[in-house]
Image 1: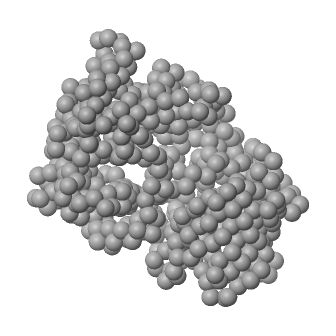
Image 2 (image 1 turned 60 degrees about the vertical axis):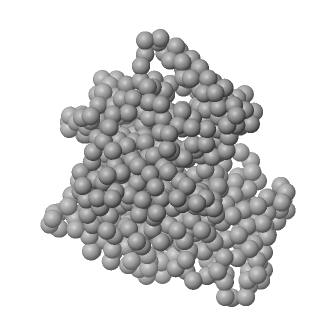
Image 3 (image 1 turned 90 degrees about the vertical axis):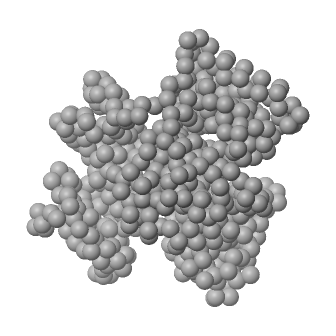
Length: 558
């Protein structure tokens, strides 16, 4: 990618996703006037007490001008670096001169040094300001109580805020529709939290799942009677005649069946789908067996092999939506999950009008039968077992996981770090690529390796052990999250640059302000595990004990 192209890719993050760099911004709505002119509405977070403001964005070669009522600034590419200059300011807006010329400029140069993927805007199908308002209302109403009474083994914070975000999105999606006219069915509802929130917000519907969860009994009776424990044979199910919306939230093997079940439910039933694990109608999804039904205009030169499995799976689902009579729309949610792309089927193709419902259903059933034949004529949909085994690599023998993790760890230490990335964080870096810790030591951060290279380090029999538990390398690495992190297909050691020595404050002999804040947070934490880095890294832990989230030898493990 050329430097100018990378410059524009960098600015696209700021234009479409300003919230990832400015803590007081919630999001933005962008309108393209032409290739070099944009208008955007910047929406601050409610608690920031700033009002939304409009901004005009003009691209001119290596310069991009941003103009609003309170500030005008230019972002310029010069000598392979990005520079920011404020041309005018009222001094009273959300964006300050100090922030634009320091923190913002540093972040832009950090992005410029990376191989960036195209920016996919979030919350495109709804009103962002309205979403923020509804999400905050739901969070203030339900979050504390849900977390307090959580009785599942899963992470209460993740599931609480994920389902609050999905509920807020659905409520925005249903704006303008009479609440009483909506009847939803959450297919594979799991813990039932999304169902509970929507019912409490005045919507009517049910949740169905093969297995009752412990948390169901903690909901009010009015919610409990709407959560149904039943085995759903999707191949034989005729749908839900009362439903106006079917919801699939990480519904696994039921995911591809949900647009089919919506079509079977009636001519006006719509779909919201948040896919996670890739399943086809009759088993695990296979890129080479299940070709997408849709032929996208830009995919002719892109083979299945070079596309991510998940993106090809989304194309497969798009194809199912179209076969079932829907005009699929995609969006990206703002939830704490790695799988945030949702598919919405709320409009119908012309051939799917109510008058053509019989013809539509003939096409749907023909497509289902065709896929069945592609596997085997005797193949049937198999609902998941009532008793679910634990399949997440946690039962791989401990000596095997230790061998694998130490082998990856040792190899990462041999790799050279990305010096540009280290310098972009204003770290104190030695000639050999070591970085200075906040207590004055030198520490080797190692480099990175792509997942394919890491896989080659592992014996085939150990890979089979992980596969037998429906897991793989990334699952094992997530189980060792204290040590490793995976970003954009690259594995590296997990450490936080903001907890290391900063070149500006190091030269002045000061303590970096962010370190004080991090230390205060860490001191309040109850440390329940020993620090892995302290025990295994040749240079020890990158942080002194008061900055580390894990216990050092001089500290008691609680």
